[in-house]
Image (tube, rainbow, N blue to C red):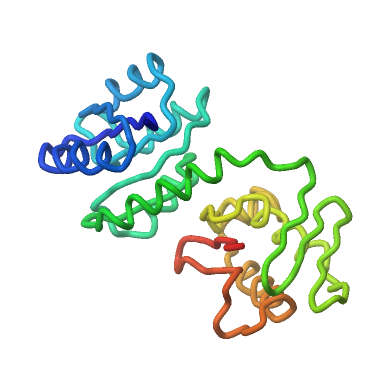
Length: 225
């Protein structure tokens, strides 16, 4: 069974997850505060961590930052906080995905499977990523659509490469701006909107209904292969 640490101080939610997760192949350990979660993470080798942000002793983003200083385990955040700022802060701290309470068990299980797929795959050093619309050859810095090379600007390539190297993962606007333009540009989201529109025009079959370069409104972007 896949070892999962669930960190939440809501007894009713813990009860539900301790029934749902084992029934779907997960071995569950629980913690009700941040300190207990950090201690458990040092004592066990978890494949996943499900983490609430509103913990009684410290904010969940603090737990994420402390974990990320030494542990790369995938972290799925569960929270009743609906503001995009909270989501961005958790993702920037190192969370891999985010679900807002209340949520359905099917969505939770699907998110967990997606995280496990990403961590279990053994990517090549320079993979060739193939979608039904275009192909990205990371080693040769080439993008091919309909058998023809697509010409990208250096900035367009940098954005696309960061997204493609993290398939399915939500990359925040702040992270993209920092890595492509530099830390001084983390609030200039208008840059991203312009370049993402250009990438979609060049790569997506239906620009108005993109299938691969997806927007999470107010938060960031996600590459869906």
